[in-house]
Length: 195
Image (cartoon, rainbow, N blue to C red; front, side, top):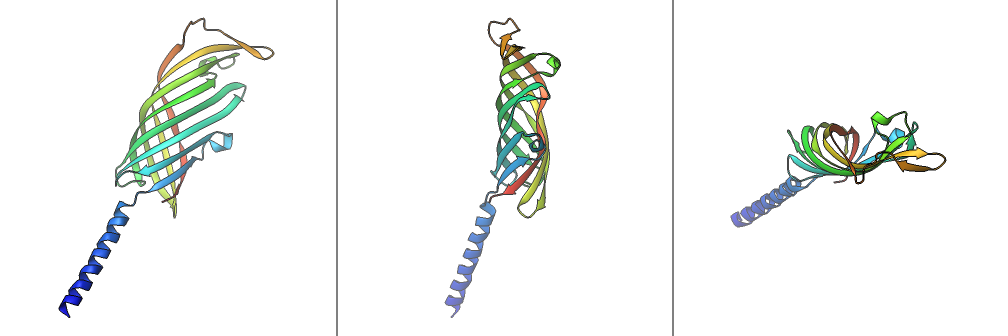
């Protein structure tokens, strides 16, 4: 009788222990969309995957498909990969992140606003993010964040020539180069827990 009781107790203990370990090892996965850019027709989607108790990895894409926005070229396509450290636990409250990304663009730089000039090229970005994520509803989170760093761009400068063509205005033989410390990530992501 004692052996049956002991065997039953050990079996229940091991099953309970395995179940607790499965729950502890279950990694969260969220799909996200940036609510700030959607009203103006820009798409920013991402996935955030839990690596451990306090670390996650997020990949996201940003697309601004506008050939013209308020009379300016505004096509931008970017992709980022970001590692995040949460001070409390993954997907909860304050975090810091480091990110790397790349993009292509056809846009009018701010200092050429009001002219017929625009720039086409690509850029590489490396920087950091600070953010705060909290639960909104069951399975839903809100992630408020801002990030930036160095953006190293290579581009050609063009000027519109009516009716439908353009010429280079910059006179450079190769690529123009531009490097800035700028904010290049940010918003309010609405997140849904997939697992």
